[in-house]
Image (cartoon, rainbow, N blue to C red; front, top):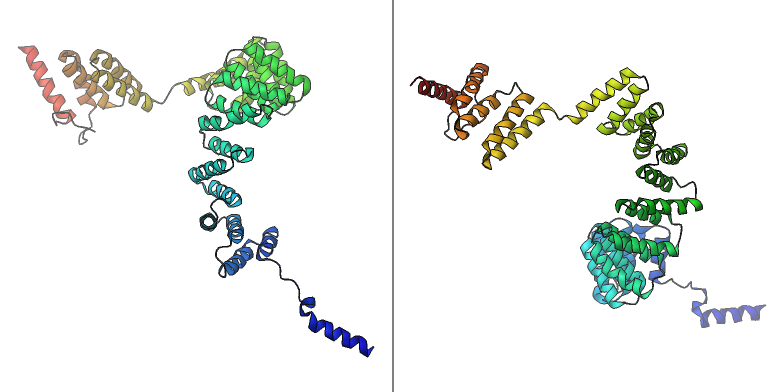
Length: 431
């Protein structure tokens, strides 16, 4: 036993590190904090190790990630830029910097950094797609296309690339190209609801309603419960004047929980066109509840109501339609006055007088308009006698002690000018 103890003591002194725990690498310690979402601890520990060796790119990278996770984007950017100073082609740092720029709203810097990455790694599809997505996010669809097209030409079997090209061309209103790429995407994944819906909309927009309906029917044969596609099919039937089928299709959408304004509007119209006013009225009412400012739906509801013998309701909504269609008197007065000024400036003084009279009709209490009509006849049309009644009416309605809103070019108040012109015109007439 004594001999065993002696051997053990010798071993301890001969190999002193046998009981000393191995200290983890700094980067490993930081990663553990990151995995536990202990970002503050990771930052503090990174700063401690970097105070001893500020050139550690791996530590600067983790520090940048920790700062970004805590929404400290400016500090994260500085840490990552410092890492790039020591290793300008470090792909992890560059990619993290793109992410930080994007999150902080510095989109131009994100794109510039992404361009640098694609230059360093031109064969890496992930980084190229990232650049295309950055362009797309900034609504720079042309540049997104220039990035995506070479990828598509190299490999046309990518659903994502074909779809994104279709979306970009669609945003640029280049329908033929958009249709081409959406059709290609559907060959790869035949029943994608999003792409199918966009393709149907393009056909409708291009007056190819029958083709749009065909695409909708093909999809619905695969998934008969898709409300968005069913809604498009119903709209196609409506455009093709098959109101019975459109009502059936849109009614199915409603039964599946779709009570959107679009569905309620066209479901109502489908019954309305069949002269089934009692069936149309409830759906028009729901459409109005979704948008009380829609004058057309208000009109159809009013008609449907009174033709369904709900006369009071019908009259209420028909009168409401008039209020929705007619702007306020103040707005009309301003509009007609502006039109009058524009026509006068354009040498059409006779047309301008028509608009001024409309402005007075819209706001008879606006006394200034009476003066403007008188002045228009007197000064611009050289018909002072036609303007005379308006000068007099202006003075009768003038409130003593009030001043005109604006002065004439001669810097005379309206009331003073009117009095002088009445004397001059009547004096001329007596002669």
